[in-house]
Amino acid sequence: MSAVAVLAVDDPRLDWGRSPEVGAYVRALAAAGPDGALANARVGLSALQLTDRAFAIVAPVGRQGCWLTSLAVTYGPAVRDEIGRDLRGPQAWLFRAASLVAEGLLRLTRADRAVYANHLLFSTSLYGAWTGDDLVPALAALREAFPDRAIVWRSLNAADHPELLAAMDAQGGRRIVSRVVWRLSDPARQWAPRTDVKADLKLAAAHGLSVEDAPNPSPDDLERVLALYAGVYLDKYSNANPAYRQALLRAAIDSGVLGLQVVRGPSGEIEAFAADHVHEAQLSSPMLGYDQDQPQGRGLYRVAMSLSVLRALELGLAVNYSAGAGAFKRHRGAQPALEFMAVFDDHLPWWRRVGYGLLARALAAMTPSLERIALR
Image (cartoon, rainbow, N blue to C red; front, side, top):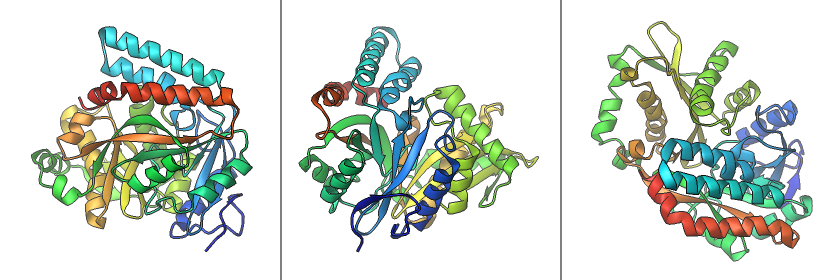
């Protein structure tokens, strides 16, 4: 049993428990430097040693351009990009104005001066069986190591983390609504029997596509994968999404933190891919992409979206399907859950706490509207 402490990622005392691959990944990212992981964010990395596991800690450095490392970007540009896609008329103007006010307040109160515990620079953080038994010493260690930063725990929902959320509530964490995510707690029951799923699974053979695991992708393959990802998540959706560098993807695949599957067309070119992260009994898919120049009838998005769940079925895992594409995921059996971040700011001066407090209250009041929009 290890002593709870904040340590450097290469500290020989670190014990990553059942996740040594996370340690290898974080060390590789740290070696790449603050700019080595993302093109739109600079970060420092350390580790939180708990009694039976360790979590990566991300400390943003300077002004950020990615929602994974900035509350101001999350509730500012990232939200406004979603509003532009999903809303029209007076409601769009109202939400856009609220986003501008929120971003201004968060920047004024230096809300981005924070550290993120259990963050691998993916959209979803997985906690496994950790229920917060050593949360109190963990918070004490984080406050001591980062006395001028808020402490943020991401990707919490009541369905997956009831005990952990209760522990964080008891220690004074502010619940701040982040998004609506989609879950498959039992893919064999919820997903596999669906008519839409059965149609999805016929597409690859119908169009001469082949699916393969890619544990050792070439530099050209990595470049192609990142281009497909960027075409969807950055060009189509938002520049506030993570702009991954090849160093991060290589570190994630080589360490085993991400499992890459690629879909090749008849010519052998990669036309789609999915990269999955497995932690204990749950799987998430933080990276996905497909060739948008191909005819929609080829169903590349549907093929790519099925890869993660097929892997979860094979391994007997639950799936965190992340946010977005609500109608698509609902028709394939996924259930929605409201996701929160828990922010601990009681060690900060009052003016630093104002932004987090007002944001938490405003989003709590707006939650019914946000849920209706996400469930469309």
